[in-house]
Length: 258
Image 1 (spheres, rainbow, N blue to C red):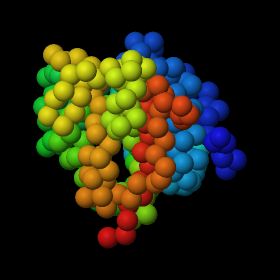
Image 2 (cartoon, rainbow, N blue to C red):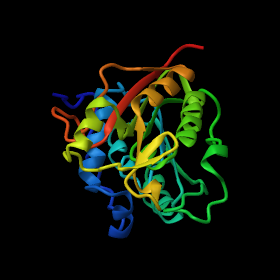
Image 3 (cartoon, one colour):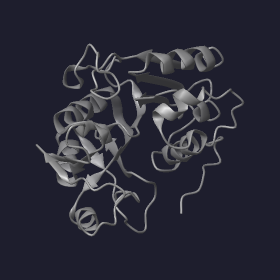
Image 4 (cartoon, helix red, strand yellow):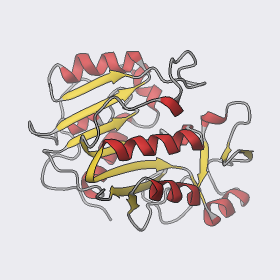
């Protein structure tokens, strides 16, 4: 069982006000509990140090940023971007104002569900940061709403902005023999009954609502971009699997030296 690091407060200990309920609901799940849970994973599984630089892709209304304010020190640095202008505005007003080393920006990326008027396609979007600028990059509940070519492009970008030896944490609904068997047996939280090109989805007309990706595809893409996957993978409970770590499947990887 994972234990919280004693190098800092992985659960935040932060006194900042929470965002309004409308913004907390936008990211889904229990806001404070999930934030503390994943900051714990960043410390315990990725070895995040208080003085490192962190990128939060799809940061929402600061669910991970708020607890990280109690862990990263003045030498540490946090950057986050998201498609929600309201969420980013709240983070800038309530987090950056008290923690200048926490920076947030809007990325106007198209998403049929969440940003249908977005200017940029995921496949063409370049993360707004220089090469080799972060020690840790993480995404939670992002790739679970993206198509395979977009996921591949984002992993290329993650590799680009990671320093050699940097780590990434990403969550997925991974399709493999065991999860597919559980789906067929009706044991999973998502049935992924509709097939698309290289993925499965729970909703034929709104595929981005939840997307499952073949584990073989994910592993191949990590290898393509010099991201060495940590074994074993941390499978989640979504498929009805026991034992599990979280709800979604978690993949940790390290960028190999170029």
